[in-house]
Image 1 (cartoon, rainbow, N blue to C red):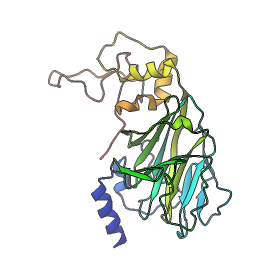
Image 2: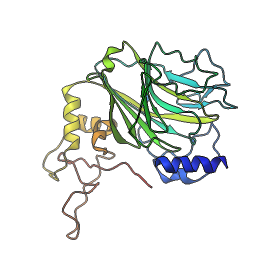
Image 3: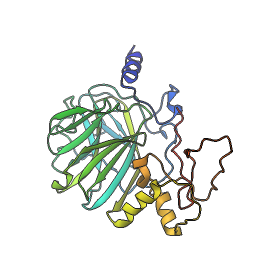
Image 4: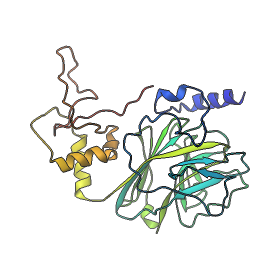
Length: 302
């Protein structure tokens, strides 16, 4: 009965997993690898989750690599939250991704960020939407609700088991942008530069709910970053232009630079396939960049 209610709620929100692997309904232990590895192409984690000092394993359990977190491993009596172990620095671009390993349900499961003024343990015995209750935090709920300073807006479908939630923070311009399965949901909040220190955060009220940090990277704001975005976004089929090897490596390893166009560079060594005479004239998802780099959509298998 409970699983049917969860399925109906997920269908009503139109939330989708990143790939079809998660359509298989099988149990997963919190210490396991957490199902499939689809979308986890880059092993980059500039920070990890920090085990809260004021909470015990009744609220939070963490894998040794400090990437995978299970909230309320036995039963839930409130809201548990964790934050990243490294503060975000001004004038940097940040992007990190979290994969939802279990089906979200209950009061709330959220992804976002907050300042060092957020008390991570003040809702252990209260079921609440932890992030966004005041001006010190920002959060995206699995229901699609965006929360900040006790205000709520609903701008997207939210996320479910198997979804990849991306968070892009531009501390040069002071903006916060969420991604669902690597598709931008638009800029949600502005004026983040007013905060002295910000940390990535996640929270949950649901028993045995698990999330894994699969990617975390940053890049100092510069003309190189802006130029790389524009260059990676250009698709005109020309093969006469080439990039220096260093810039090729940058665009391949820092794939999030191309995310505004929902595309990324996976393999710079592959040759560009020729279009057959019967193929449509418009470029498809495998057309090459003007630099000769190959552009592909991330594999979406639903």
